[in-house]
Length: 116
Image (tube, rainbow, N blue to C red; front, side, top):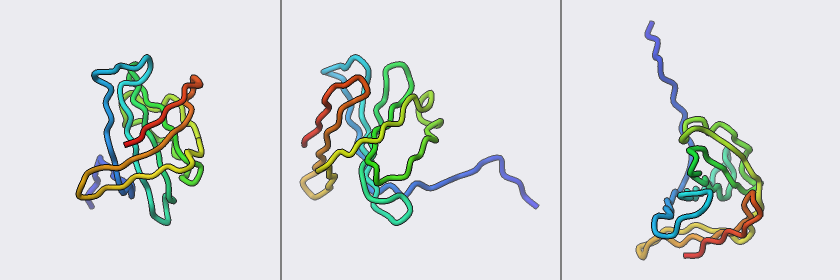
């Protein structure tokens, strides 16, 4: 019998995009990671991981996705999980590049909008 010290899980994410704020720094976040899901297990919708300057992450996601608060592998771990409708959000990849659009109000009541 063989015992492995590792355990693996696969997240059925369809698309991922990294947005770093290097030239226009933010007070709280240094980057966003939009993730698009479309499958029977995870549902269909957008999750945005907001990478914080203090090393933690905040997660904003549409209510159609299951509430997953296991982000302990991301940086120092999860600070806040915020469910937000983000109506009209989309994430497309084509020969021309990435076309992503979403908007929400962050946890300190700032309007955040990404349009590409």
